[in-house]
Length: 434
Image (cartoon, rainbow, N blue to C red; front, top):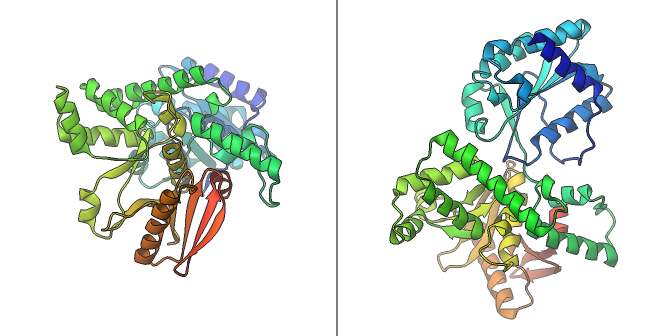
């Protein structure tokens, strides 16, 4: 094992880091805290670690002060937890002078070793290191980290590429410091349409539609198998697959477990309501979908009203369409949700007693609130009246003086009853989100 670890460490220090598309996320890297990076499979967690290594080297830290171990390396199978101690021992034997310096250890997919948690806690306490871990969402979820690492970890979530990151990946400048001209606006609008359909998973950027759909469907199959069936011991697989297809085929819609349970029952598929609730939570834990409650101060009202369901990426939703139809309105709303979700905002939807609905009410960690309506277009007079009326009612009841309407490509400033509504193209809105 020692000879193998020496070879793995030497190979890492000898190889150049891969060229990567820079993510806008940063690690906190707090003293005496373990950075844990989580998210759905194939979102780029490993490459995000490479970005952190590159940043270290740009700050003048020698590469020999960095250690990267990928526990998915088949040469390490089957590594036992009592062998983990050999990693720092081997490293410091190779670089004894670095024991006096701060070193940076990056452990990828460490959950492959049973009982890894005491090792990383001891390593953080006994050595002068900054430690970052990644893991599949199957066994390195945020709530599990909280219990197993006993408050020693701080979590960073990785999602598929944002719109800005996709433009960066394609080599397209997206600095809005200067207003873009007509040609640049047309380019942004074109790329927005692509982004709506293909989503942001790094691997499928630029892949033709049939292959892209197949790859994304295979992503979901792996999540079902590894992060739901194996992890939770699910045996009633038929209703689970029905649930996933239903949710991904109908993004940005209200979902009721009771109604879905009745639909399954009418088809002769047996499953309990409580089990369906559990399945839904499993899919949220695996970062496949997410849900949004109604905006209400009453806990009971939030509980009894149905939640809206969103895919974690619009590409997944489009890959599970039953037909070739593109519902740009739903995809646009789902895209806005994922942008808000990246910011770790408190998200809900607003519905008045009269039935007026606004897609998003958000609250930041600083207490800043905003109302966001999503509409493909306001060119239709009935649509315009409905969307603006809902926003005015919501602004009055939420005591807010401003609101936003995100459209495909329209821009306008509207005053209604002393309140300001800004209509903004989706590409511009996305590029202003941080």
